[in-house]
Image (cartoon, rainbow, N blue to C red; front, side, top):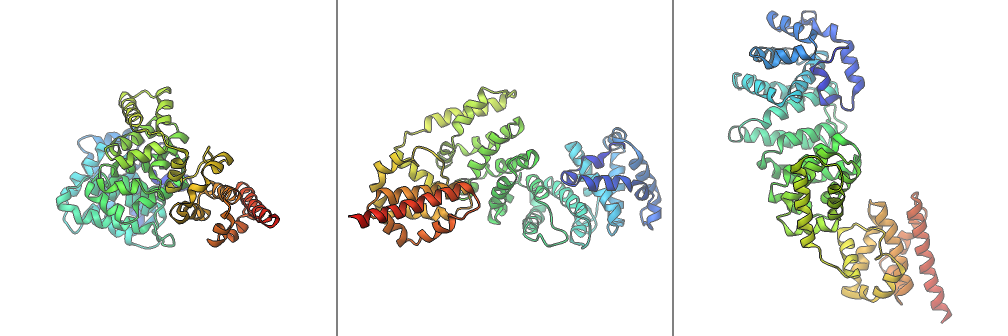
Length: 450
């Protein structure tokens, strides 16, 4: 089957079966007169010629001087047939593929848009499609992607409100999974990446839980190359705005830590490029540098510089970050390291979670009415399994080495929580919860023997 612009649309990234189905129905779609179409006869003929061409012929049609005629033909069909799901399932992904294949092609659509009236143009027609019920998801996602790409290229002064409103609509759509026009996370991620090159939209994105969306994306899809590329691209785009700093340093979101884990998991140069461009932007903020240091980016820099990175600009950014981090590393005491892990809500099996550490430092945990112990206990409810397992271990050690450890833990109501965790499905959590309970009871037994 001949490749066409249709094949290049990202709406088929997770919907290959839909692509095959559309390709099989091409003969039914190409004859618009059979659909009772209102499309002008000359555009019906042009559409038939375009659909029957292979990708190289289609590229010639779009990129040469008569390309605007083909774009106007596609608008005529989108406008006149927007009630027809079968036609829209072919035409809209084709338009998306045209733009994705060569970003310069967007200029043809902007030229077409500028010649259209305010009440009947690419933006209004695509918006109508997005509001209609009962279309296939492919139609909605292609319409959203095309509308995002056109809006992203329009002048801020004239289209500020429309850009904001559409971004807000996209953000809201992620919370209505029951809706027929719900958009998948990957579609939303690419739409956000188009629009957030405008700094005035970054605040709108962040104010509407955009950072939480990125956090969840990296948590759910850490090994998916395309999803992570566009997620990291958004992180880079928002890093140009100072308004993003509190979100990058939020220990619950872990945007910096997660992004570092992504580039370690997927060792691809295009991911490293965009991630380090983001870190470079953040390096002007001391609190961001501190978080970057705490997440061991320096080790990643050292590994990457010994690897196969080819692009000089990427190597320069890695070298730059390595030098910045070396200047900012401070040797911390073991208790300071422990405090940092607790405050970041990111525990790792390390020397601060050992018998030796607790023997030497247990009295320090009395400070500020056992504030560190209270924070440690809060991590029993963490959605990160490693946090829960290590918290169980540490609570057991605290009870073992502090004369009133058992009383403190029971006073906080956490013994019952640990008892529940002793039946957890995760074997590491279960093992450490059982050990903690044994230490609590052992402490009690010792007290009875005195």
